[in-house]
Length: 180
Image 1: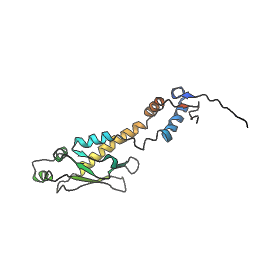
Image 2: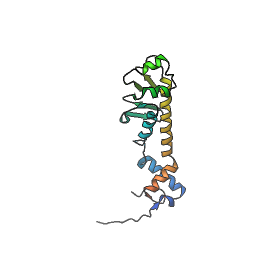
Image 3: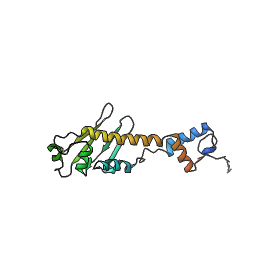
Image 4: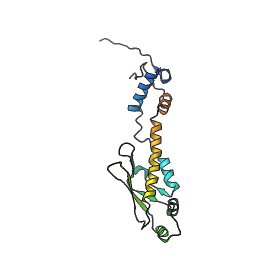
């Protein structure tokens, strides 16, 4: 039996040529940095909902920022503070049909993904009588999706990938490939 030992020169990310850095980034994005599984900031989503009197079970959140582009809460969205929610929607609490909404015991809102075409969100307010909040709720969900999109774009940016590679002290061969 013959044992062969190979010696490799390993480089920190900052020591690589620009072409090698691009290969290293590609390696990170395709494997190590596949942040699409659990990368989102639940706290941001909870805070945005809380600002307007809403809450949702984050374990039941499902969304896609690709072609289907949707945000879906499997168990719906809860209205914890109906007065705050209705005010945030710009509704006049002096109107009877709006005040009637405050009488419900735990208003809930069902959200569903509306398939086809541009993959718009579909919000169906339940138990809200004649008060239409669909446009407002869709705007809220669009704002949350927009923030998630910004977060995803940043996490996939060269700047964020470079920072992560350097922070983890990954080493590469001269051409930007991994030694393993």
